[in-house]
Length: 143
Image 1: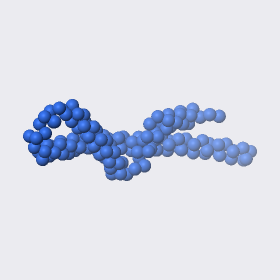
Image 2 (image 1 turned 30 degrees about the vertical axis):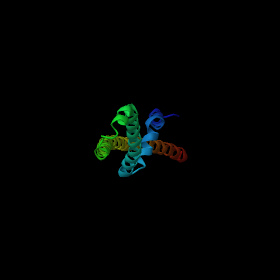
Image 3 (image 1 turned 45 degrees about the horizontal axis):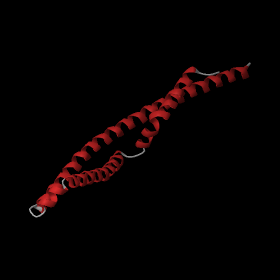
């Protein structure tokens, strides 16, 4: 005979596993510092690529001015400004990625903890059913 409570619990767990469970369990396998470190490393490469892409478009857009003023441009100052703006951009973007990665990790940990609690409830349901079956068998053998 089917136990409705057990079926509901199993359905709830299956929905979790199908939707958010895979990602949350993948994240929770990491230590917090490792997960954030990997996110920041990805961020470094993505931010550098994006910055160089924008810088390249800006140079192409202003190429005529650059060619006209090439003799009077202070290259040391220009390169210093480019490097300083890159470092500011990278620091700001990294701070945002750190916050997002921390929030995702905390949410995944909470989600996996709730999932484990739900598994514990399902385990208790199974144990109660097993005890109930064993009691019924013991009564039959006594008769």
